[in-house]
Image (cartoon, rainbow, N blue to C red; front, top):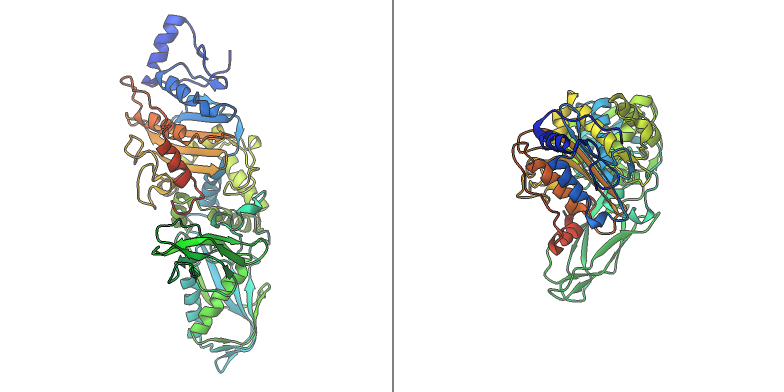
Length: 528
């Protein structure tokens, strides 16, 4: 017989006690699925067993741990100690470590510096733009910096504009990130000096706006946001007939800033938007800043270069980001990969004087270990989960979720988790289309995770009796999506009551559910 987790003292086990008295058995129930560690054979566990016996799991793997959020007692454990690829559930580790290490009030900043004197409105030397990792810097922030430079009385720079991104290392892409993802917004390059084109703060990307041409067959009309001289658009897209399919494709060539726009846009279509990553975002940010300076009447004689600013350089202007506590909302609600990686490198820079993945991941692991997570049983390879070398267990995730409840910043972090079934994009986040009109809606708060063949959902939910639970479910290597089973588990936990039998929740196997998953069910789909 297996070693069993401690049984909860609540009414949840009443049914199991009756069974044990009749059969004289405690432990794994007869016919229980392989890999299930039974607390005891309760009604809740039987319902979860049934859900995880779904044929979609044949040939794949699933782990599920359910625990009492207050006592930590284990109510259900299937493969809780098995390592899985967690996708964006990795952000649970990076986000909590950032709240602890950097602090909720930490702000990123971007500085404009100089060493040369200013005489007669002329800076007689180079102007330095130094980034400290701000992933929320917008074109408007670079305009504000330019205004500060102009206000300082500078009308001409007779040197170069030097872009300094040395606060982080030069490793732009994470461990095992796929080359065929590089063009897409969720796989942007990480630099200490960068730029986001939108208030989702998709740093390291630009937006290509598209409209149909004046007549069928005419070239599609394109516009970049923000305007810049770094990305070069190669447009072969045309205007299709009204009512035809929109087949527009926007992809950047590997290793370059050549962006190819192909396909067609139907006549009469409204403005479309596609995000594309930038090769070397440092130069992108510097170019946008240079344009802002010129717009403010500041002439630059030299070119854009990259180098480290002298330590003795004086500050002419500064822009600061929102706080890390505030950043948690767009980061976690929208599962922003670039925020995760920036926070990891920032933790390395602050705690270990090295703005690198290796240093930041060491800090992340050390924090998890301090909470009681068995870090010798997991592996973190990046902060976002885009890497396919990350391995965690459902047990380790549940340990993290339980321990962080005691942190002084927990409420702000908890509020940043996506909320099931809430349609507001910055409330429901990646769960806004899931578990609507069920007991889990506006109840279950959890982090989603999506990669091909991977789905994960881990967080908090209250039962019908008001009992708060922690859960972590991770599925790997399936061929047909198991997301409906994941949702059914969440609804089962939210529906549960110790007072009376509860009707079983069934996973939605309809074609409608499958289409919803394909069109808006993954963290990497920008339009969702």
